Image: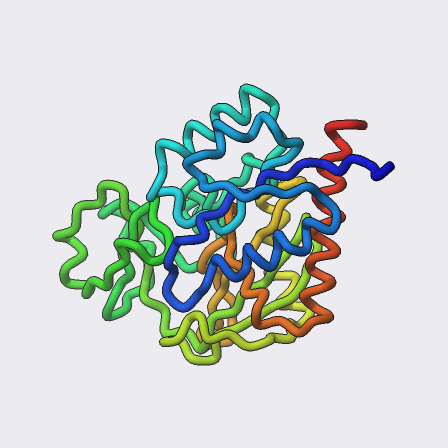
Length: 278
């Protein structure tokens, strides 16, 4: 008689349209592989609270920016906390999962991040450049992002926005981790084509940089993507620490790397589920 498998509710929005990425393809592939170890059902983020009690674990993946369903996401977080629901990623992330405040915190701590302020009186802490990036604290997928010349910064409303210098970076690079274990890195050689990615071989210094932020986040279990840019002087600066539902670009990986990622993810999910039964 076959052994009963753990039931996993996989939260995704297969219809979400993202520029330069096909979320649905990634999640169709992932769930096809997770079914080798688990009983898996997919659901839209709006249905999570209604369905999750019938499952052993909720996996939040490519569900789109939560600002499109903020009320439902907040209800899910509250219900999961109240019911003791196992969630992957766990819901204690200090980075994008909690908004963009972490960019201000990391700037204040002097860590290698693009300098960020949220008050007019703090503009002097930013380097003087011709143009600045202004984006919502609750933003995602570049929604609401705009470029503002220096002489217009004083005219801004600083309610709910962040200001950063527009860094003339050489390229962007992303480092992918599962439960703190490095998996692979990809980069965009052309700054104007963020999602045309190629394999990147990180140096020991690159990995030390990325691990600094993964460890800062103190997640026991979860997938994290550390997005950075290479400044003209060669320094890496953090752009974003995505700890909610980072797109993984699995379709760009070779079979060996993709299989290793899936194996590590399965191991991570089994480890989380063991806390329920152990």
